[in-house]
Length: 217
Ligand code: ZN
Image (cartoon, rainbow, N blue to C red; front, side, top):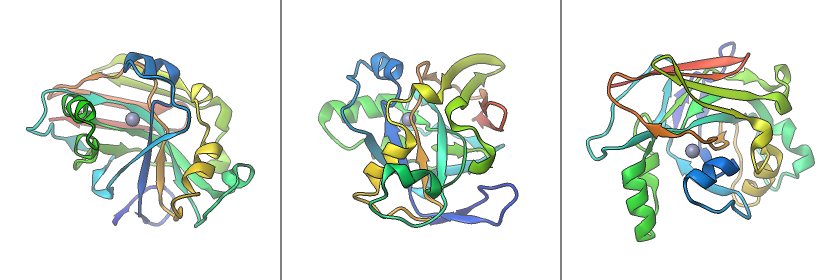
């Protein structure tokens, strides 16, 4: 487990688990030539994937095609299992903006072989995160995300366009996994994912709340 600074104002937190959602925006599912899923597509990253605002992330030697995916993440504040969606918000402590860095060439190869895509998504540095904002300071339904690379706009999205909302996701995941304080849930990327190159500077925002700067090396 990794101990990280999640909340600017708070003590350090350990992150037991990182859940991520795939294909949670219809236009991204379309650009991946995938169907919109019937239930949440859930995968995990190990906590070594986390790096903070200001990090430099090295492109692993195994890939020629590392992509950015800009995603809103939620921080679980207390333990729970079999959480009903109407109670789910009380389990959310905070939220922020993160990147689900993906080795697309490797992921496509693994998918076509029917193999797990862990190594294309869970490598060191694959989950840069901003400081998170306490959930009571945030209006959920109007959350907007943005990414620029070297000052040029690359991705933007609205939380209201997610297919599975966080309450439903918490209900679904917690039927199978005990949620623990410090768990993170990444909620998927909107369209516009693209390749990154050494020297690229990424600026991701949860608009009006918090932001994240990462340099690719
Ligand atoms: Zn993603």
